[in-house]
Length: 82
Image 1 (cartoon, rainbow, N blue to C red):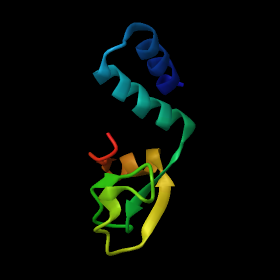
Image 2: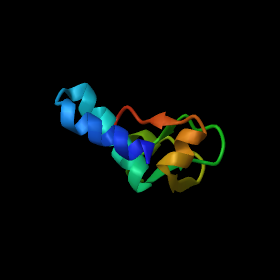
Image 3: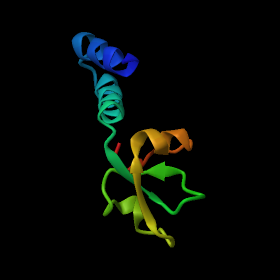
């Protein structure tokens, strides 16, 4: 519920590009969209697309998970997709 309220407040009062990034992150969290990570351990980033440039060097299995779980593991969004 807090995520939805924060998303609505940002939507109402902010039109800057930095706010747009925050809106994107919050909307992903509220919808529990799926993202992709390289392997179960050692990953540093998550990716919106399984064909992201950031996953090209992955030598492990690409794992599908939710944004919330990925962020819970301390992962951040891939810079190619931000």
